[in-house]
Image (cartoon, rainbow, N blue to C red; front, side, top):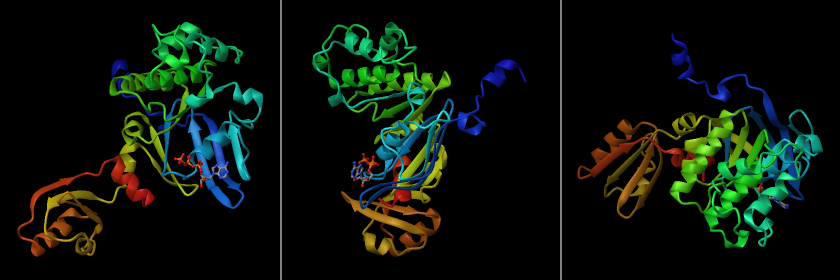
Length: 309
Ligand SMILES: Nc1ncnc2c1ncn2[C@@H]1O[C@H](COP(=O)(O)OP(=O)(O)OP(=O)(O)O)[C@@H](O)[C@H]1O
């Protein structure tokens, strides 16, 4: 095989024995009577993009806060670069996207960048931050005069000011139009290609699907599923059947291999482990069944099946 061919088939970082840069080991975290994390294990490796998914209250933010050193586990261990995340030396190597509300509104874009760069021992050049975060032409604009998407881009740039090896992105593209979102995805992929590790939380499943080497699904403080986007999707229970039928969902749910059935706007959607078996039974009960479509579940369907939402 030619060298060029070897280079054309990169191995995803999670498939290599890449160095672990962050770990949560059997972590529990309680807030009074609320158990936010319940024996969570998570490993982030060099050069990978990991998406943390889960329903509201699953424990995602708590897991991120532990890795950022903003709180300590009740039991278990959090480590970044082999150190306690609360140590300054470990924190110098991480960057995180803040919430919009945390920034002073009366500073200019470039003033925000210079301020953040001053916190780190070896910051990225300001021009590099402007380029990566696509802030060209608005460096002199006040924060309060930026659009929602521009504010998000600045927050992304600020997370990179310290040239971090580990980056936490919380809903990075919220409020962005499709073009800006795709532009940011290119920059996030470029970070991973440079060997940086990215932990992403997002409610856009399309974003996790497009970006992540690995998806970790959390529910009730535990990891309930983990794998590549393709692996996670294949764990959705079988196939989706869409059709128009007089059969009621309550009846459909009793058929062989059917795991869920719903009707909306006259269109019936059935999830079945074996679509052939389910369809044979459905046609036997309703010969008028029509407008039939059988599709593979998307990430959203798999996510709902995995978390039981
Ligand atoms: N400071 C706190 N005090 C008390 N309870 C908390 C605190 N922070 C989180 N919790 C609780 O811990 C659980 C996990 O919350 P967490 O914010 O980690 O979930 P999440 O997956 O990030 O949710 P979301 O998607 O809604 O942001 C929830 O029940 C939440 O109410």
